[in-house]
Length: 493
Ligand SMILES: Cc1cc2nc3c(=O)[nH]c(=O)nc-3n(C[C@H](O)[C@H](O)[C@H](O)COP(=O)(O)OP(=O)(O)OC[C@H]3O[C@@H](n4cnc5c(N)ncnc54)[C@H](O)[C@@H]3O)c2cc1C
Image (cartoon, rainbow, N blue to C red; front, side, top):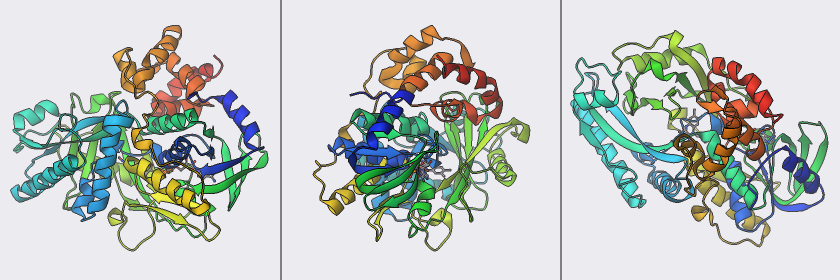
């Protein structure tokens, strides 16, 4: 099983893919498309999967990096979606990606703005969330139940909280990804290990019943990939390839703060949004010391950009909510970076915040299958449904779905330095060999050796792949500038 992706493998597979007919062509290598590639390949189908840019170029890298237990959906009465989320969270935590998904604690500070009635309601919700966990058979030792903390304890876990009037906090647990782009890279590499051809910088120009017209974005050359069935997993761009797909994207913005802005934070925060019942901003501490603060939900119209811009009003809105619970306000100058992503929501009536997060698998009149909607948490289930539909449509010879028991690259626990195990799981020892050869720091706690690893094994083809997706150094522009020369060097080593 060769799970390494790199420029040499890409070239060799590009050559082969022109002369064969694969069972499944997947368009888009976000979590969904990578998931489809893995699902199909692990059922014994031949697969080519392409992305116009890079692994995790789209929405999948702009998430809150949470693996949700589905509580939000339960609150909206979407019991099926909630249960599905909890089951998928359990699969990731226990079997397929315990190295990438961990339980993380969140506090809801009981400030004077939160009434006793509201607090009781939220606690009831948390208990129902714990019920979802139990129904999904995720052990409590992996995801502790909710509890109420006194104010002193809350401020121990979150020292920046304002003490004045604080009655305590509600503590709950949910899944957190080490990084969303890393999840996508792990899924794609696992698919490659099962023989899928993973081809970045290949744009689908047109989809057909039996393949696609594709352009190699590095050479400009166009060619055809022939396939028994095509799965469109192009996220918010899916409608550009399959005209009958109508999406209503909604923008979600996060701020990126350096750890010093919120010193000592050991838990995430659910910050009530003033004037909204049951909607919260999230404060999300990351393993690299940075803290993300999200997230907005604004419908966007018009053409879908490659990389969504962050409007200044999103920044001020998030800061205003955050500062309602802090002792010392965070000001604009402490916002070190910001990012926005577009949710691929299917068009429907109503406010985007209320649109269903359920996924859909649709077959167009020209018999192209599109899989969209959903979320990172449920990528595996989305992929299973899409491949089931593809197998049925063409009567392909395929085994049943096995991805619930296929560990992603790195899921096996072997030794290595703890900070590398945190990011690379069972591959940490291999990464460490390169880090010993190239120990030079490149910023955000990373070293040149890690960048070299990404070039040799994780399919990074240029500086942007390295800084913006294999590592997230680029989320802070100042750190990105400082690391650029090292990234260029890594590509030559
Ligand atoms: C702000 C925000 C926060 C979120 N937070 C969470 C969260 O915490 N937890 C969670 O579970 N979910 C979360 N979600 C939802 C989740 O991120 C998305 O549902 C998921 O990432 C969508 O993945 P995808 O693979 O379908 O799309 P994408 O990741 O967008 O992938 C589509 C890919 O298709 C490629 N592509 C486009 N056109 C072409 C073409 N013509 N040819 C070839 N390739 C093409 C793009 O380059 C892209 O890489 C969040 C979403 C947003 C916006």
